Image (tube, rainbow, N blue to C red):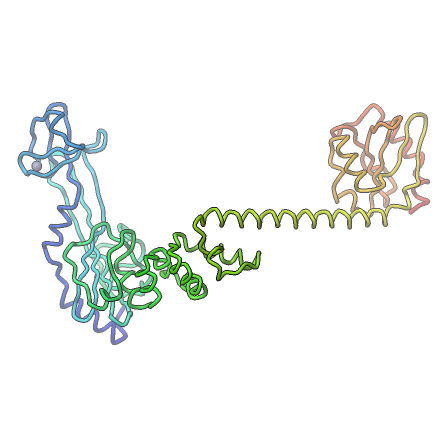
Length: 419
Ligand SMILES: [Zn+2]
């Protein structure tokens, strides 16, 4: 992207004037890289200088052996392999004119037995941070990190402001703008130095959080969503800082505040609720309490729905309730409530206890019994005036099926009269 703003033009100009990296930075990165040896039965082959030497097991200290030729400390290749590839990112923190600059390189090394290592480094990013907090990134191709970049593409200004990567190694000779120092900068592992320096200049709350050791909240400012949360809950964060409470998981903590306030109407200015010593336990307590409430609400809703369905069933079907069809020891009567649907389903292990049956205005469900014992459940179609199905235990027919069907057919008029 072509530089458009005054700041971008200035960055590009300074970038071209300061292209070269100091060779000692690369040498330092090479020293940081892992060095390998092929461990054979009686000899070792140095994958740095190709020297082959005999060894005793006791020459290895903590898995490392020193090459008698190049003096480097070597580790064995994994298992039976004879080569290894390693990639990492290293950075330099420096000052160019008025800018705090962080340069990030990729280091790629291929070590192989009986060969000299192949080493490639290339610069991926330059963060240019202005004392005003404005920030520009020069980078090679956008896309992924590492191998996702196309080789040989020139560094340009890119709309890449949210990309911050912590590097594995930071070149120890650092130059830091006085204002960055004054705002509290120090290297904290896991933090991208570029992000931190930018944040310390751009957001005054980042400076407060960082100086108070609230690193996780400070890091959370990288996300604009969490920045909003931090603004919203700033009074609570101040209470935490006064009570020496470190917010270790900002997302969890924000959720907790919302829960205790919205669901339980608790005072979120009370340290007892917002920064208890055993935060995890307290948080879990309120989550459990909320879940219990939800379950209770669901149960009440279910009971209400049950009652409503039962009333509807009685309203729709009570005109059939006095029907008794009987012959010999068989008696057939309609089910008179949802409770009876449940009992029928439990006794015969089928699924008649379902809205499909009790809410269907075109079907009447009856129970066939022999001397009071349940035999089959009958679905009678009130529109077609026919038996739709009749099922016994576990949905199977019984030896009474035929008699039940005949009895129903003989008495259709009893039902028809009631429609
Ligand atoms: Zn060697």
